[in-house]
Image (cartoon, each protein chain N blue to C red):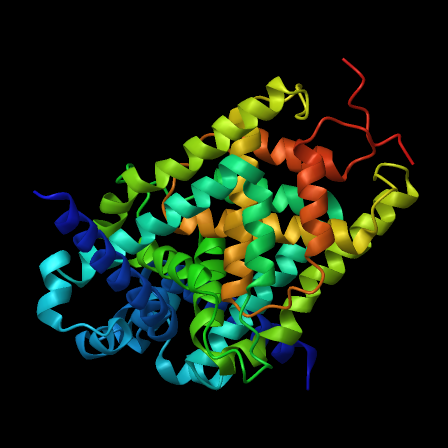
Length: 201
Length: 201
């Protein structure tokens, strides 16, 4: 396949994913009809489903894309930073300007919901979700090597701890509970995995 | 009202709540039909709805009852103990003997689900959920007075931290993810709020 054609395919795929992301975030999986996906991407259903077999495949590609982005942030800045970004981008029910919840959180919530209710989706998602765990563990191993991580608890436990807090945060935001007091909680979470310097002032 | 009659009413109410709890845990809120509630409680619909206005009120009474029990455990043993009991009682999809998920987790999951999807329920639940937060904070204040709690982080932050982890645990179990590695994670959570003795062997 000539190079220019591959670039074109990649760009078109990106266009579909970006449009679909805001569409899923706004209307949820069920509410993201083919017509709405056409509007959001600016492409015909023929063009969309030339690139993705069906809506399910499109959603999985999107969730996988987000998992890549999360894994990148984890690799660079750690899982707590992913959580901090969820806090900043959280939907604000009181502010009419914020009609769209953070696209990222939207996809993540939809993944959580479908994991609960759809065993087939759970199986398809399992292999993809391993990515974030792997990125988190690699990051923690590097942090340990540089002496930034506490060394009295195995990396696997610290990684599970961080993922559990992330899940709690997603759930908390999904329930529309107040998140104003969570910044210092995330500071505490971060401090818990770091090498300890609590005696400093 | 004569004393014997009040005792009778209390016992009948308890009978309904116990039957309804396992019914909701087994079939979910929507699936717990009036017929199934009759079977589970051994009482007629007339008797059930003499004590509770409707299914919604029955469910709220149940969730409130569980919140009381959780608050009692929190007062005596702390929120981490509540989490440990969720781990022990967790539903085991691989074991055909365990048809019923832990009744407690069942109610809690149903509360989480309805909080996400039902704004009216969210309003009715808000006042009741405060109870667990209050019990957790009171417990932490007592622990601080006895010198068992770290004193460099406000009790409110520690309480929010514990509740966030609880929410993550409920979500984790709801998604059917493996929970075998979570005991040491809860040890870490407990250690995080305790007065620090990490230098000890």
